[in-house]
Length: 333
Image 1 (cartoon, rainbow, N blue to C red):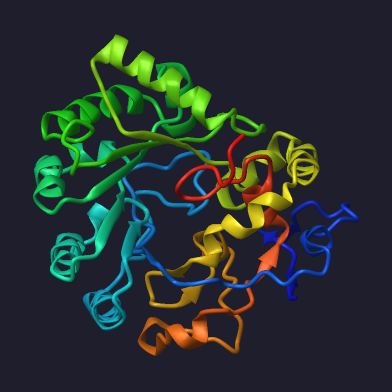
Image 2 (cartoon, helix red, strand yellow):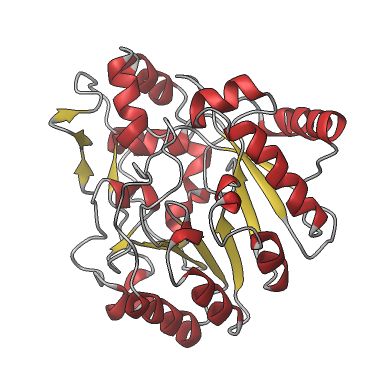
């Protein structure tokens, strides 16, 4: 299996560790099992610049998916009947063809997930997003670092918490979290160099506190481990937490998470149409293996299924403790 060491601005992650992810796999090959999700990162333009962002997204980024690449993704959805389209960014709503993508994808009957940062709702021409999402039965997944202002603003920027609360109320008003067909899920990731708590327990805390304090309801809370790449890695290095954090991930390696890793059932596409095993590999420019199709225009589920997954030390983030995927934990705590 190909082993890849993370690099970022000339520095390697966890350079002194004698243990690799492949060592932990014990000779087992990590392979794709099926393709039931097309996860499309439509670009790095965002109205925020969060401290933990593995995409390194911000308002000054210019990478945006073209209509031609969106059409190539739609062609794959139509031809191969892939059940789920997971649209992410950046703030995906900020690209010019976002609504076109959602509406055309909806015609195929695919389940549509949009990773929505809440505050983009207050940008120009975006105030009707709750209604647009509801009209297209979009499943909304939104990051909220905590149910208190201090922790949220520390990670995402001053004033983000208040806007996020207002946005959640607007989503509730549109039926999200209330109407069984309009799903609103939240994402929690730690504000600091530690692993998430038990998902079930913190979900109960979030539901109680958001309902009591603000009258907000939602469906599920997903806990996600911060990945030691991009902006979060920069912070780990600046704060001298890199080695201790990586050691925590290695020590918490859980072999029971392997079968449920998200790389085993999705293909990730970047804004240019290049294919990856997951969104984290995408940000490290670790494309799928050379033996597999490389671009969305070459998409071939037969050749992509059962492919070897490209791995590296960042994979410890997805296999620590209860595991971590875009849909929360992998195994019950």
